[in-house]
Image (cartoon, rainbow, N blue to C red; front, top):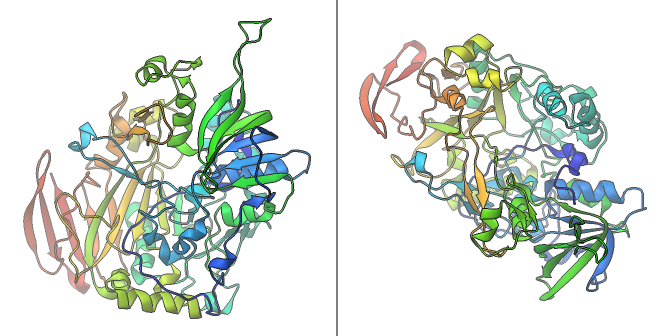
Length: 595
């Protein structure tokens, strides 16, 4: 059995994610001129072959998980016509939640039938809070539910992977696949798109070709978003670049998104699967969760032979029957960062103590399964803004939101043509800067030659949930700046609650200190300042915000009205922080956070 590393072709779709939540209003706009589908009767049937699989039917490859990577693999493995492939996906087709396809609709995916809705265990180092992990439970996986941002990262990261003993993963190896798999739709490719602001929507056409994964740019651009680009350049020395997908990950511009020329999502489902769905050697079952991996038994002549994955068991929830399938070549586990290790452990592959605590007899003892969870922690600062610098007002009332949806579906105009934020800046710190903030461990880990901090701008209160100290007020508008460590060295875990795949896995986030802990200083040190400004000539939010103690966790009361000189104290788990604001000329405001 090959565990995920078989997914070399899945490098086609490196998709960053974010999800935002609100209430979902019903609407019926199927007959508008820009509508993509005509109604429930057009929902897709089970893909590929149409007949019901027989019990213990044999395929060349079985892909457990029809998510981002799983559908890329299905496409690639069936391309020659020489191999039969079965893909099993626990969730439904994404058309069950039509909001998934529109840029303004991804705020309604949270809590729906295509979201796993995972929660961590209470986190000791976050005052026992639990964190949400929004993961796609549908064909296309999290590429169907994420924040639409597409980025390839730094070439040095891939080269580092290759040096660690992973041939085929260097930048030169994967770049040609990135290029082959994508098609970029110019921001002026249609009259509707050309009507939006075009500044910073730049790209290098040599980085893309005519692949199935459609890329493009957001439609509507709030003026504060363009101010963020300038602020990253002027205050944080992040260069404004033509394209962030060429291997040099440092820079800021409007991000490329996984959207087509009609501003509809291009997920792994909409791209790679649709290209392959009619192949007779492909069978894709949705609503078919895998319940276990079938392992071979020691042979009568060789009792020491190693067990081998020869198939899977699953439930076809559409028919209600339990079934099993056999694999001639490989079982490929592609169920994401949480459910892949869960499936391995439920099947007897994992740490001995972890298996035995829930009554599972170990088949293959591997102490690494479920450990070394790597993620990027994010910290957000919210600020009140004038209405026309934010997109808060779009979702303030059902009437506003309905009007925005109708403008999108009927005319491809308005704020619904963009997610709340896909404009990010990537900062690379020098080795001396890393040492100055106590992050020598980043250098020691070989992570100095890459970007270190990602700054994300959102034209709303992000991430759309109240903080422990503050909640968005119904009549106010907001913007948010979020920072994420790109080199976090602390690790999380995935463990079992029971011996069944029907129970969610138990997980700890990557906030648990694991020596060395220095990378957290990237987001906590007073010398690693996040600076944000909007241009007075562009944005009605004419403010300059300098946060000297950047992005302290849960410091979310910085929504003080920035209208006059103030000084106030904010409760914080480790003491008090003093926030000062001072009005300047041209209605600029400077804000300090002082420990």
